[in-house]
Length: 152
Image (cartoon, rainbow, N blue to C red; front, side, top):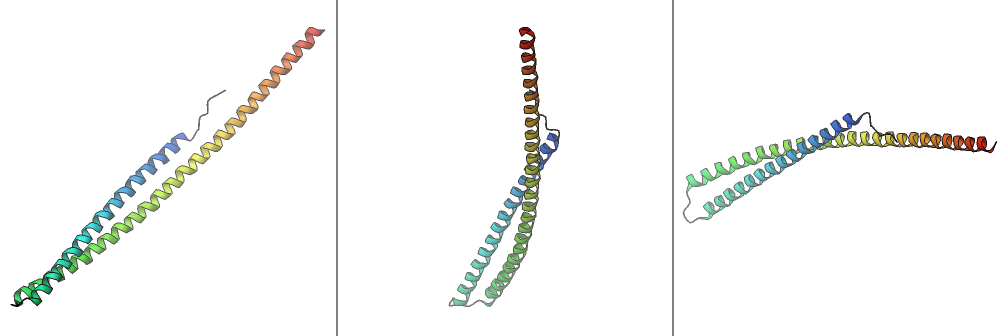
């Protein structure tokens, strides 16, 4: 019995490497999204703390206009940071989606190559069985022919 050699094995290996790279890129993009969301949460918490401090300034017995104005500016700046960070989160999520699509495509291509390899192996096995059957038939014919020659 001969050995099965898939003639497009190198393509299958390349597709496998491309899939691994796409998975790594997806994982990196996912990590980036989590980091950006964490930064956004930090900005939201900071703005919330500043707003609470502003309320306390307004409820204090002795009002300080300068402190209240400074707090308003800090709250406004924190709001800008939240908006900017929200944009960063959306961009990271968009990149993550692009990487997910790329990964899915790479997985599909690899699976297609594996299916082609399985079909090629099935054809190889059928050819091997046919060759083996032919060999058995020839051996049987030869053996049968030898017996009839000996009987004469």
